[in-house]
Length: 414
View 1 (cartoon, rainbow, N blue to C red):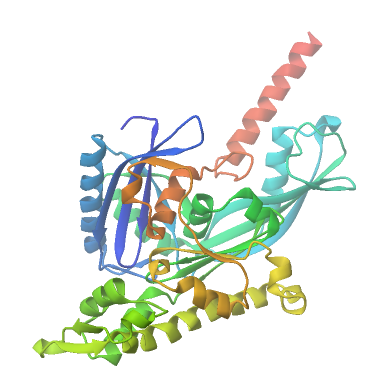
View 2 (spheres, rainbow, N blue to C red):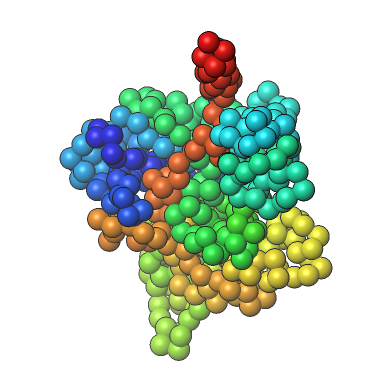
């Protein structure tokens, strides 16, 4: 594959999406290939049938490669699931030469990430929030500034090692290597948020089929990441139970006729729904479908609101609107339902609500304009930087930098 291309692979509970794109000089992503395939071997971010997942990846890969006329060898992979946890920590470092260098930044981030986690866990992200030099706080880029002591506040995202290994195994069985692992909430945020929204304070809710990824940004930095393992499939299950219909039929009806608000013209509309076990097709009023769907969506959004109140006591005392002035941005496949903004405004007490779609993309935009593609598109844009996320090779990099400094000292002596 041409080195200028980047590939994002999003393995969801209902569907696998693979997108091939190219980063352009103007900051846009040019989409050249899109492949997707239904999948049955994934539940809430975890692999339950490896062979089924491998087959689905193959199908999505073949479709995208044919469209882009290229061969994919490596991908960026998204990770989700209730095993995702996060915490905020700090690290300090004595600045060498009294001027902050890239080495100093790497060192302070390394110190911040040096916390003990369980043997079955893996550190997925080390994301800087802000820096301080001596008494000066709120620094976004400390390189080049003078001082004695450097402090970094960072956001750590942790995942379950074995659950991630199963996803990695599925990808590798398709002959692909993994360039980067990214939390789905981080990827989606990268695709749909503006810097202004992050600065004002915003909550991103990526509503998929099996999970809801929540990412909270305050003062420009990621402050909280969590996954709730209830999402769009809960709505499908409610429809199937309420009307005694097979799950695949309930999913199709949800996508085609599901809504959260009805206008007067649709009040008498009837919908055909296949019966279970070969029973006759039945007709149900569309308003009855709404009566099943709307309470579940309200409950799902209520879980998000409850999570925000748990985040910080000031959210409850001062109100969410003061902390999250840019409101709530909802994206993901389950965000495509009509009337979601209206219901969300009610749940979140008239906060600003919008449906998040990827920004600054071109090329095959008609194939990826829906919120369902936010995570895969974000994987094309998000890139781990040596100064913002420390890789496992930190110790090697640190040794090489110290060795280079030693060589410079010898040259100065002679």
